[in-house]
Image (cartoon, rainbow, N blue to C red; front, side, top):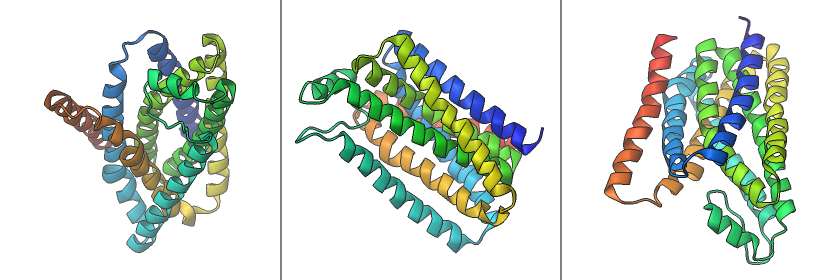
Length: 261
């Protein structure tokens, strides 16, 4: 398969599978499964960064360039998330990703417009999917094995996020079928991002280390700033051991895929 075929397959399946599986979890699965998915996603993200993405980025560019790109990328994602949070704020009440459904509903009843919140989630998710598509394209353009690992890590962290988005949409007044339709429509942005990333990079291979550095910063930021803080809400020993094992399982899966590819 060509790099373009891999990109189209990974972005199409990635977007579709993450939304459908998220819908299944949101509609039928036990809520206790979601924290376990988050722990596993942390492992796949960190494993992909340190076992695959960074080594390939350093092969294509100088260490100082890659490190600077990662640093700038982390700051950019911090600012982007701040902008999203500011858009969600209303007077003293502010929606934050990671709220439990009951907390989320409580926040909505303190002045938020339900439909507006659902719309903001869809806009933010569409942009996120587009960026993920570009990052997947950059990884496949650098190396097919790296592309597979990167796509897998992105899909793993998309799943718990999509579950949360489904719950927000349902609480915002969307019906199940309508929420599924709009999430599928949003996921199509990943394919568009993949195509544009391929076109942009086809004749500009010198951008590869920068895009890989950006991919690494995105994964690090999502894992450390968005996912890990939620795991600390369960400080008991049994939960901590479970989290460590699932994070290790995610890292181990990335290592196995990298070794077998």
